[in-house]
Length: 255
Ligand code: 1GP
Image 1 (tube, protein in one colour):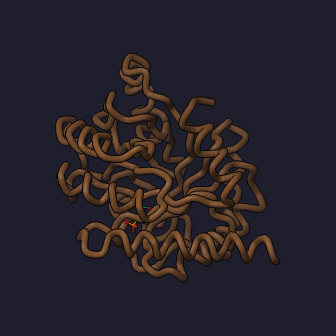
Image 2 (cartoon, rainbow, N blue to C red):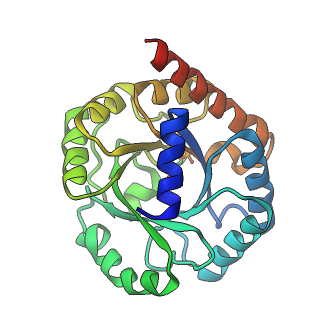
């Protein structure tokens, strides 16, 4: 386990759950990303994830990461969509496989193509099984996923368990950026029971209650992006998710 993964897992153990802020370089310029990251750090977010389903400019990715690193101490983790998402300026990269893609390129092809470049940069890799659930948004479309229906949590649990057996220490339940409704808490709960991997949950989380329910159900890492994209009240919005998350952790302890 590398430095960043150790830091993340220790923080999850200490705090019960953590929040990550997702920034898409195609939607947030380097300056805007820097301002949102400062707000995220103040609001109690534990890390910044950088990525977007249609991102292809390495320059843009590098510039966004460099400006964030100038202003915040939070770890910056790449959330790659393809082999163009490799930057030496980040702290780590989710080394992820879209397990329910219908195209082997997104399961192992891109990973093999990108692996030598990642090794050269010295980037820390964190193994992640990525599952597209429900609507799936742009990630589902681009990744040619066969999305798991919201009312079939047992299928998500099977995939999550397989991911764990393959050595993936994190599993991401992805509803898709900007979707109408987040992953159902019932699904999170069933997946959590089935797997020993850390559970990342994101897509469509807008309200404090969504954060509360997701964490109460068992999310270890909560990811939000769209809610802060327009930059208006970014700090307030992230605080809202962090508060919801903390209340859920307290409720878990008492229940
Ligand atoms: C997308 O899960 C993330 O990859 C975050 O989704 O933009 O809907 O918060 P939102």
